[in-house]
Image 1 (cartoon, rainbow, N blue to C red):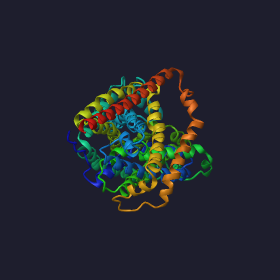
Image 2 (image 1 turned 180 degrees about the horizontal axis):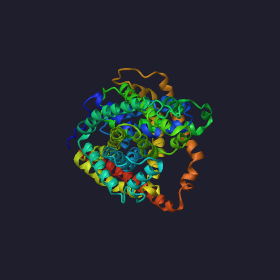
Image 3 (image 1 turned 180 degrees about the vertical axis):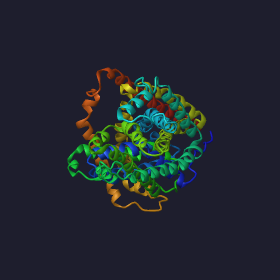
Image 4 (image 1 turned 90 degrees about the vertical axis):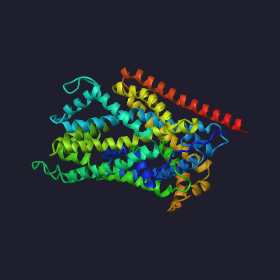
Length: 522
């Protein structure tokens, strides 16, 4: 009989908490959250946001930590194997788990490119490449030139963007190559404190802006904070606001993706998932609500005023991070240093997330095919590098938006719904409750027994139902896609279907292989 190879493991509780927090703390904390909050009722947005956190985010966090640890006991680190461990009598359930590899892989193939922009802009800030740009149009042109969407006085090709993509991609692969303890944990242990240090420095700088323009006394930091946090309670009547808030919770906690399942699979049976999960979630919320909510929007209000800020808040995360923020920082002393800190903060948030997105695919190859880590990472690196190319060269054709919708939105909610039903109804709530508390240093409030079994799945069904009711026809039939881009979107969808089918075939091959091994050892 072939000896079982030893699975990787975390070096410490701090390591796993920092890694899960690093996975959750990404570009969305500093770009997506303030934009969503400001454009959806300001402070009123926080009501459905926190409702979603307590009824959706935290329960799913505990579900995924528990399922991951449970599956790790069966030498499974990804959703197909974990789902099969829970419901062994159902031979199809492992194919639902394919989503837990598919989603992270799809996000990785465009997220890494966007992450590379933050590294590039860190460099541009230090050398003063965008220093002389003084208006939105100029900075927008700079961004489009860098992305290869146009040729202008700043860039005449996509070469800069591609070089920084190569650097970023290689950094990701190197971290993943060195494993859980030697790579991901080591990265997160220094990256997360540095991220918070830069974030706190920028928050203090923004909060001390005061009123830079004496001729416009109302354009001050207090009114800037008020624009973001003063509640417009009429917004609570809109179902869209509630859906936006629930969606932000998914994004911010990295639940429903499959990453936490994989990370938690490297825990031992006695490791606490209750306190560790709660600590990781709290760290993420601190980064999002306190840091993310105190930098861009309040600072933009001070320099652009109450009229333009409305358009800025709705301009999208790319414009917010790569157009508005550099313009703001250019107006301050030590602009190069502040610009570097802002973009390197985003890079740290990005890379701690992207390495986590790679881990499920690598773990699947290791666990289900008994492939060594070096070979598994090499296979992942080659395949994902090829898959990244459409996101780079077809950015202007809507490919990234399409990948983001399916990989980072729809399948995320669908996967969360499946794993919640499996946990609470197939595994069984009594057994699940006991499993959560194995090795726990604190008890989960008993009300969550009811929430996890009934409220969380109903909430998820509501989100899916609202999507099918309001969105599916325009999205499927590309109602809002320019005619020139529709063929590219169709090809992207064909590519996504092909990726999913290949992963499903690999699952089938892996299980057939295991059955043959079991038969030969009898």
